[in-house]
Length: 128
Image 1 (cartoon, one colour):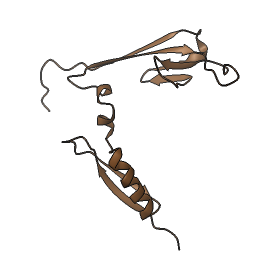
Image 2 (tube, rainbow, N blue to C red):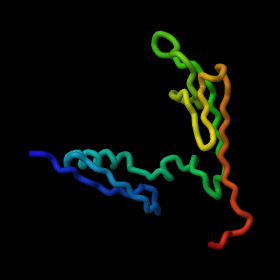
Image 3 (cartoon, rainbow, N blue to C red):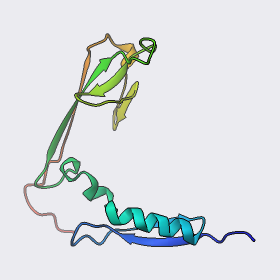
Image 4 (cartoon, one colour):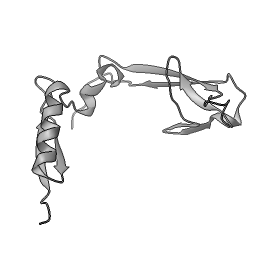
């Protein structure tokens, strides 16, 4: 007999947040297993997963520094370079965002990519 998909709606665990997510499972058993895991690791919405990274009126600027490094793999370095944040264990050869793309292997090892995002609030409240 084929299994029927089961859908669950979950609220963000951050008190006062109304965000919800919808998860689909292959079976009721899969959903119950997920519910058990969520007791130890409650789901948080994107805004509340890494709150210090979310730009807002009170957190108006963030800067990230990535360095082009060789990546080792068991028997020696892999070809090319990868962008890594300080203390990170992984990275990617391509960093991109609005208005830029930076390929680590196009630059010398040790090159730094400094990306700053800043919110500028209007001087006066806008009327819409």
